[in-house]
Length: 154
Image (cartoon, rainbow, N blue to C red):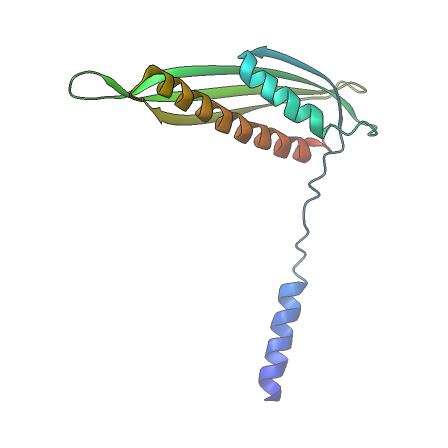
């Protein structure tokens, strides 16, 4: 009984004191300027998301430059040579510049997705809009994640 208890206690002590530390998910950057170019719809959504997470009381002031590009290609055709699926690829280039000391970081976020062609043209457009919204939300989350990682580097 006591040998099992000692083994159990040692294992618990080793596991709980492994040094794992939760990353601080708070963004402590003041995004004072966001410059966008490329696809306006995607940039509008990204700009609103990033503006809402900016910490106005922070000492680190940064300028973001966002350039997004959306390309739509045919993915599949059926036997009658009619398009059945499209593929959308969104490439977003983000430049992060500290306005106090001019340190710069640059990174890219790439997202791809497919959508089906509907029976009506309006269904196809709706499918495309939904996919672009989902992909843009995912891109904004990745940008925020990268900003949290870069907050000490700039």
